[in-house]
Length: 316
Image 1 (spheres, one colour):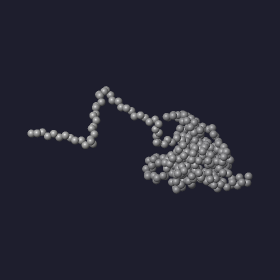
Image 2 (cartoon, helix red, strand yellow):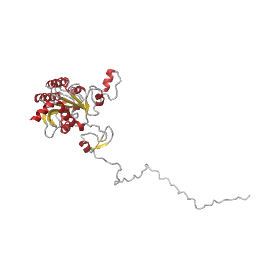
Image 3 (tube, helix red, strand yellow):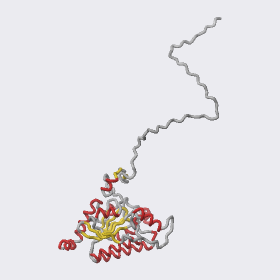
Image 4 (spheres, one colour):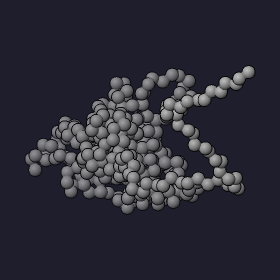
């Protein structure tokens, strides 16, 4: 029987696969590294530090210079950032009218407190970083036409805690205002009494309130301004006994933290019960005043509360 053979025809479209020769077997295999593009630039925009601040309330990036010009108030949502005592005094008093009192007074480690770090070392660190001797600046100055005694606390110094120096400086300020017949303004921000001084810090609550009692007996006005935060021993003493109590928007104000109060009372707490807005609705404070309006409002309040002094000043 004859055998038929077939021949495969190609149409010229097929391509022959090249033969693949396996690499020689060696002890290790090397791979060529990709060259780095030294000249290539990242598309990520680099923002220099110290020029912008992110608002914790609205998450907007605010230009620091713009924030400073607006007295540390967010231009988008009006969130009030913390502000130092020097900046606040500069924003309130008339130029070159503030005479500081007891500028060199510093705290003493009466209890020889030791812990992670000693009290003395903490004081030295905060004095270097803030440029302050302690958590309050006091003095005599002018707001508008009114001469007055002014005390301003600073939260950046050990959380604005009230130790012996804070209590002594405020007591001396109040007594000087009583002696000179001046109205008094204290702007508070504090986490409370300073634990490093134990009972000595708690004694400042009674001392400052006693000085305020003599000031009130002389029929001189006292305006207390509460800023974020004003808590614990400060709120339980001189900050809450003003003839007029003002607060900045959104300030946290209270004695103990919400968790401690809830665990103690075993009750559900209303939302925002330690904010300035809640306390205004419930009668603890008299008015909420934005930072940029504070100076003008203080001028009006002092004019209303010291009519006799204004007449004397006008006559002289």
